[in-house]
Image 1 (tube, protein in one colour):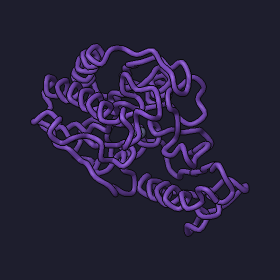
Image 2 (cartoon, rainbow, N blue to C red):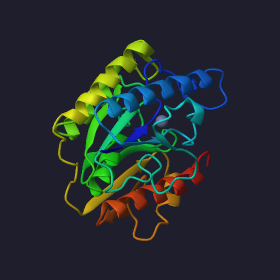
Image 3 (tube, rainbow, N blue to C red):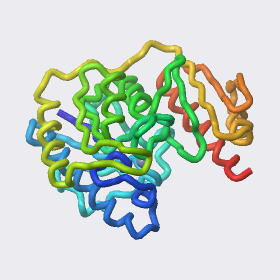
Image 4 (cartoon, rainbow, N blue to C red):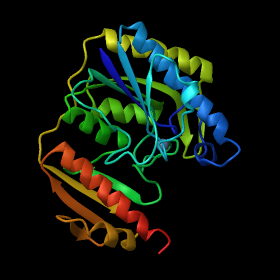
Length: 275
Ligand SMILES: [Zn+2]
């Protein structure tokens, strides 16, 4: 069995504030340790359940947060920028049997959710596919699903877990903390979070695997940006439409194309920052 782990940071136990997730702050080094602890907890659970290969994809920020030497020796690490089109599911393919999304957070616009956003808190107000708002969990699950890989475990705060359970029938969720606001939470201790993650990672792989999340194409992608300037940049993409001043849209016929539209829109929109 081959297992793909996509690990973000905002949904890790003990993380509540933006200071903790940004490189260069005095909190950041400790956050890297917390992130590695949860990665190792899930790796251990996967091997307990008989995994032969476990790949960990660093999925936060510059995609370069985990210190390689911190990781369980049995796992392989994908790290480094730029991993495109979507750095959070980079390298996932049909050779994997199951995916796990660890340290994830709720989508942009979720009340009471810790550090909620959809791919970019600096630019994205809302992201929709076929009319439904999608966060990173839903979008990345669709990319995994396009490769036939089911998401079997999602962890994060209670809001992230609720959204995952609503979108992905049969997924197992682990809430390592309860969101009390955008920058506040009540968390399990890191040690207890790791215990629960190890147990649930193993249980998820020992249970019948759920179906992959594979909504039928075409995929109508719409992104509402925070400013018209960001939207002007994004709308340059061939095939893009601009149904409203701050909304860019495109129709993808495959998850691969959907992924490319997302990356193109986001990478261009950042040029509108501060303008
Ligand atoms: Zn992140």
